[in-house]
Length: 493
Ligand SMILES: Cc1cc2nc3c(=O)[nH]c(=O)nc-3n(C[C@H](O)[C@H](O)[C@H](O)COP(=O)(O)OP(=O)(O)OC[C@H]3O[C@@H](n4cnc5c(N)ncnc54)[C@H](O)[C@@H]3O)c2cc1C
Ligand SMILES: NC(=O)c1ccc[n+]([C@@H]2O[C@H](COP(=O)([O-])OP(=O)(O)OC[C@H]3O[C@@H](n4cnc5c(N)ncnc54)[C@H](O)[C@@H]3O)[C@@H](O)[C@H]2O)c1
Ligand SMILES: O=C1O[C@H]([C@@H](O)CO)C(O)=C1O
Image 1 (cartoon, protein in one colour):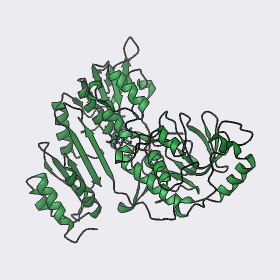
Image 2: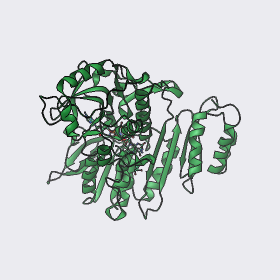
Image 3: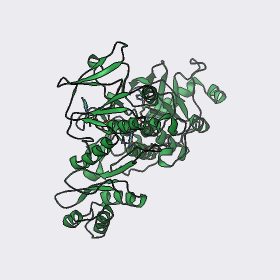
Image 4: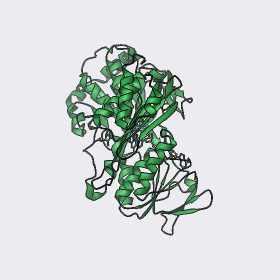
């Protein structure tokens, strides 16, 4: 690699960069095939990688970046052409593992890297650091992009590298929302979880912990509290709403999960906000004080109060503030307002074709699919709009010896009235049905793989269902059969 780079002249770099400018709006057009070359190092830059021109640059080395890299490789367009600039110390990995297998107790074979690099979460190849090298992909680790100039096509990294790009894909994801420092949000023993470094820090606290408080009743709260049961810790979940998973679960569905957690010893404090986190004499967190003045002791606190898109320093590519927070706005081919610049995964607000609205999805299935769709559109001439079917899932209590594993999937839109069938013994289903009797969303706990595979068909087709019949279903199997038969009634979308 070094010899190829050394052979490239600085003059070559400049003319290559000028040719790149013409590439522009990417998505819809085929990208002209440029001479295959390795990294182009200007004479002035000497060794090192400064002032290079790179044909394709991905900023962010997370889930979406890993799947994007795979698509570049599949098209034979990675080798010597692709660079990933990452804030983290590792190549892209399957982030969902961090609150699942990663938090298994030490004697229950916890997941560790390199075991869960992308793309193993979807049954693909495990892309280790060697995989990137073998495929000629340059990865800059622990060197986040701190500045961006769309006019000169340049990025600046925290170490001072200046990178010139041909096309740019932004996949900076989200960051955990934090409790303010002034109320104890940064005390030692207070954890947020977004990356491997956070998970390592949490595991080290769990090893010493006795009493933990989990703040937030969403995905992180539910997954971390279940993990804490595996470590036999006294666990309390505190959140402001009436029930857990308020973004998705109905009150009745939530109640079933809450009961199961309670059977595992987890305590709930609902409808409560944190006034402050207090430190003990050793400076570590020692309690959570609630707004009503009550105090809950804790030697470890895990905060899961949502996530925010990481848009800085890319505001100039165009932001959307209507969907929720500030996010980078893209079209159905993941193109931002600046030609040649794309955004994928958690950070991007995109048109959700099937429901005809803009949305942003903070889940891994979309990270994977948006990456694939964006890179395909960039590298080929296809202009097929992204047509995403929302899919969320969770799995908890998976460690060996747990009394009851939980695994659920949801497809579609959780709008309209709901019909719930079954209980944990043995499985639960919830159907969301709109005023035209169309099935809009479907949830299943503990289904078989065949049953789970029916869910996307239902949510995609949105068949008209016989609500009375569904309500009278005697089991989840029965309810799924009724829903399946409505697929063939000829009234699907
Ligand atoms: C603990 C946890 C568990 C999860 N579990 C599930 C699950 O079970 N199911 C599910 O569907 N979804 C889950 N998710 C959500 C899922 O992981 C995300 O939707 C997915 O990771 C989004 O991919 P992304 O590439 O857009 O962002 P990320 O995977 O977050 O990657 C973004 C990357 O960009 C880097 N970055 C940020 N700014 C810069 C910069 N300026 N320069 C360089 N790099 C930068 C970040 O460090 C990070 O590595 C989970 C998320 C978390 C945090
Ligand atoms: N299985 C999965 O899909 C999965 C698992 C883990 C994490 N994630 C992702 O990670 C990100 C973070 O997850 P999360 O659980 O933090 O977000 P979330 O949005 O799922 O839940 C946030 C919860 O925090 C609570 N909350 C909000 N503001 C609060 C406040 N000021 N004080 C106390 N509680 C407050 C609410 O109970 C809310 O439900 C999300 O993008 C999520 O999709 C997904
Ligand atoms: O999508 C996922 O990827 C990881 C794991 O399967 C990778 O091994 C995980 O726990 C998920 O839920």
